[in-house]
Amino acid sequence: MKKVGILGGTFDPPHYGHLLIANEVMTTLNLSEVWFMPAAVPPHKNSQKVSDVADRLKMIQLAIEENDKFKIEKIEITRSGPSYTYDTMKLLVATYPDTKFYFIIGGDMVEYLPKWNNIDELVKLIQFVGVKRPGYSMNSPYTINEVETPEFGVSSSMIRKRYSEGRSTKYLLPERVREFIKEKSLYGA
Image (cartoon, rainbow, N blue to C red; front, side, top):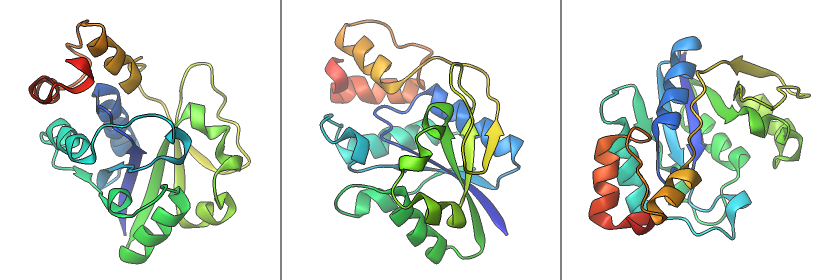
């Protein structure tokens, strides 16, 4: 059975933190691949402006192009309405019956799992992987595979803020992604 990690998010923009987490989880759990799954309308970010889907897809493609075990999964951006993990994973499990899915979340999300839509059904479909983060407990009523990764304190919101302030983003995200952001004048670049 193929083992695939799912790393969801807005990826606005994708950065080295995303790539580091994907690689660490993949190697630690001996996964075949990690699929980056951009959300169209994340339920928890309804009021936040998110960059155009085509631009986010292109940035992910540029970010992962050097690793043939990293793929893009477009299921959430092809569906309309808010993206709920349960609905998405139910479709993926039905589409790929010979695949075991490992859904990767940050340690900050572990404590919110009881509030996730249809969580009791979701945990029957997938295995959660919690990436440890300083200051967050990995305690959960649900089974979590814990993976320790090197700390890299970068976030997409921090990068967007740096662009809007005209500050450097070098070494925070892949150079090809930085070039694309500049070319498209994203985030005030």
